[in-house]
Image (cartoon, helix red, strand yellow):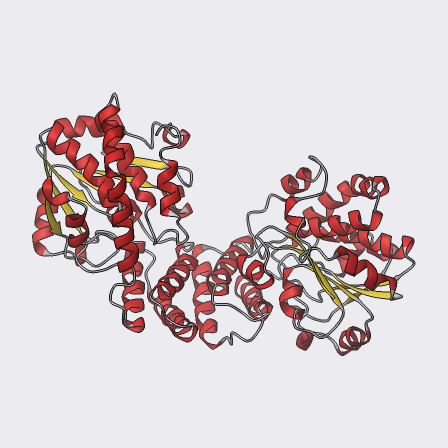
Length: 291
Length: 291
């Protein structure tokens, strides 16, 4: 997906939020925003938003001197989500369509996103899951929720590349991966980011959340908030190109890969009006698109 | 009020919205945003937000070649509000406390604001007024709604300087001014902006909405979206300094004058989180503060 002009105010908001989370004082925060102002005019709109995201969060890391500003947030979200695991697993076990429930949970887990929205009360949002059942109105649109197509695609493949998004959300991914591996007999490779970027999952998050018990975990080699192939390792690119089917989590990965000519299913919550407009859904919708 | 760093993403959003309303194409919109990026680093945070607002909207006018991008919007809002006038007047006539109702209506009219929020459905918001009565929960806080203090202040003066905010909203101001003039016997001078700035009321808007029937209308001499004294005419500054009591409408005027050592009552809806935080109220609150 290209960058829209509406992304520009949002880049500033993200820079400011990240600078604050990194503990930068107001003078440093202003210096970071001024540096963003130097970058923006040269940023080509044909590039996808995670390209700028990568530059902005690198800037915050460098200028604040904090290598992983979201470390504590990621650890808290991992712990919080792991505590939910038994309850979530029971939801899958009790459901008529295990895979559908796991897909839904995986999308629901994508609320844990600090790039798109900074004031998330993850705990509250997750608790809301258990008020009533999982069917949401926003899921009703056939175009946006291509579960049948995903099921058909799964029937045809042996292995899946699963692109992770955020820490904490990993636990929700685990539930889906368990279905893919244990119930459907697929092989899954779980791909995380290489270096700290926002609250995106890294290898240690994947291990902490127990992915290593069901899937191989690798790094994409990239430090962008979205799997931008040009920043990925040669090893990952080879894997990507050979992949039979890709499950891609989160907005950043959608932005980075929406124009790739591959069999990719994108699972995420539409948390940004630009993306919602790009795919033609409502803000907040649970999205499952792809082919 | 000083500028906060959170205002910076909002400056970009405002520039983009105004560029679009002015009919600029995407290339021109980007050029406008790039120009904003050149201005921001030199903008002192001690200055109040309308200082930057003034520069941004001037930029949009110059670069788009459209002198008054909000002209049509202003005319529509004037017409829409005038159509409501008889109904609103009846509300005042039927109320136990005419002045209180008129004050409330004047604050309610401040929803007609394109700087703070671009997607206003003014018609819908105004229609909502007539669903139920005017008492809102958000008005209950004593600190934020100093009606008694305003009444005491009014008792002590003969004349009032009334600083206008937006076109359309002028009709709501007229209801309050009619109470001040016809019921309380005060003299009112209604102050509008000198040149087009966002959807702020100009002299022709004030006349169209019938203010000339109850008050003298003058221009402040300023083209900032808030009465920044340094851009005002000598004539207005003299008037301001001699004023017994000032009623100031809208966020822009609050931002511009909140630190002035004068008897000013600020009436507005808190439509921006930074201002809400600055005065300690909730977003969306009806605000009446001052002394």
